[in-house]
Amino acid sequence: MKELSLFEFEDVLAKEKLPTNLTSNRHPIHKWYNFIAGFSPEFVSRCIKDADLKADEIIIDPFAGLSTTLVQANLAGFQAVGFEVHPFFYDISLAKLFPPTSQQQVNAIENLCQAVKPYNEEFTTIWTKDAATFLTKLIPVSELKFLASALLVENQIAPEERLLYRLILSRVLDLTSQSQTDGIYKAPTTQKKSIPYHEAFKKVCVEIKNDISEIGNNLKTRAKLHLMTSEKMVTLEDESCSLCVTSPPYLNNFDFAEMTRMQLYFWRYANSWKDITERVRRKMIVNTTTAPTNLKRNQQLFSDALSECFRYQIEPVIEALKQQRLVRKGKKDYYLLVYPYFAQMQSVFRELKRVLKPKSSVHLVVADAALYGVHIQTEKLLAQLMQENGFQVLKIETLRTRGSRWLLEKRQGTEKGLGEFHIYARRV
Image 1 (cartoon, rainbow, N blue to C red):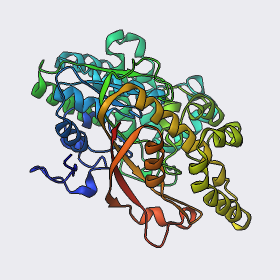
Image 2: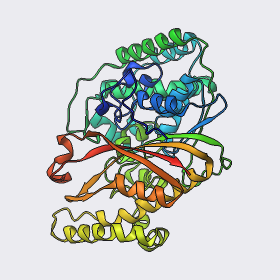
Image 3: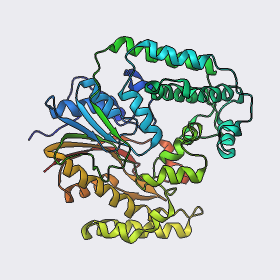
């Protein structure tokens, strides 16, 4: 079998951009709403091209996020299925997967929301005190008043247009925020230039209407997205999928609940920090210290799920993290993340093995980690898990080294630096 290289195609994208969202703003629908943690549409296209799929074959992404894989499959005319537990990502993804077919649909939302008057009551009549306090730190009060009024007209939007409305208003929310994304989340102490509500609304709607004009009625949605964990893909039959393109959560990288705290509060998916943990974090793969405590503490359950050989590989890392915790000021319990993370990822791999046809390709964008300076070669450990659970790993290639923001004192790196990698595997 010829070994796949992502860099053999004529339309070569600089390989360090493949695992980033830096090119999403070039692509219709993708650019309507993307996220700092996403990979590129080009990466998905190249994986699809290499797989040489038949028209009726299905692409799967068990960590759909904002559905880069599914949207790109839609644009390429293939069926796709995804799993996503984050409720905000799920709703925004559906708006992208089932886009409007006419500019009039966008105009109706724009006209209604542009006509709202500033909300003049206390914000705590809409949001909890915790949520209102946080939102006013991120968004100028003058703009938040318009956003609040726009939020309250949702029941005037036709039910079939409400997800598009949520996408548009969420983009406006981002644009009106005066706090930039500081590394991993919207930080109230950081500043960026914000755009006034009415101007932001016009900007977003023009962009979407331009894409609708370009795409027309040529896009036939063939994607399905499930609001559930991929640890148990009960909605899928055995050997029903033919290609997997995904990027699982990186160990101790992004807390996707914290990163979307502004959106979770604004749309009232959650009303407090505790709420965010219970309603969002609890459903996610354990990958940061903000995970629910009882999940992290159930070490024996997760340890027993892993093979003796695999435990032998990670036990020295866990011991090193325990020792570092004793001498570090923050006393972060990083050592409690390792067993849960890999045990839950193993569950996903086992389900992927079940739902993929034999010889199907699997492409993962992953990263290594350095917790308190203890280097964890996550890409090699995930590859080992895949080999133990029904996959042949054909290649692990470095896509890029990660930048200086990963080498802060609070997130100490390693002497050789951290990177992102492409694991190319095949279901046996």
